[in-house]
Image 1 (spheres, helix red, strand yellow):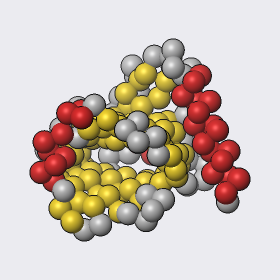
Image 2 (spheres, helix red, strand yellow; image 1 turned 120 degrees about the horizontal axis):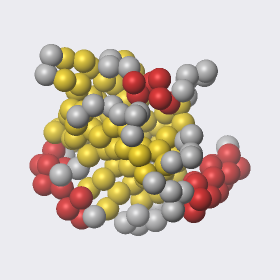
Image 3 (cartoon, one colour; image 1 turned 90 degrees about the vertical axis):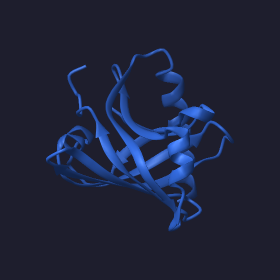
Length: 159
């Protein structure tokens, strides 16, 4: 398992280096309106930050990425995201209006250079007002982050 994580981190480094000059394409932006860490409410801190999660790709790259952004501090956790379901593409998972998708996320924090593998579950709900979501992130330290909110705009694969 340790060698798999090492390979994943090497892959993350190569992806970041390779796509540095490529055009980023936002697939979906999820605005956070409620949040908890290990069951403790951290909503005020994330609202103050204007925090959101964005799924994106790069031109010429078939890998999907996730960024957990805190704009006020200009910090983020980011990295490639791989679906855990077999024979299902990231695009088809994101394009469903409702449902649950599970991923492995090979992330790096730009604020402390911590790297690792987290488990991510995205649950989307189609409602009359639009798409709402719950994103649950289980970190390598077994902390559980839960974000709730809404999809800004629509999921766009046409850009």
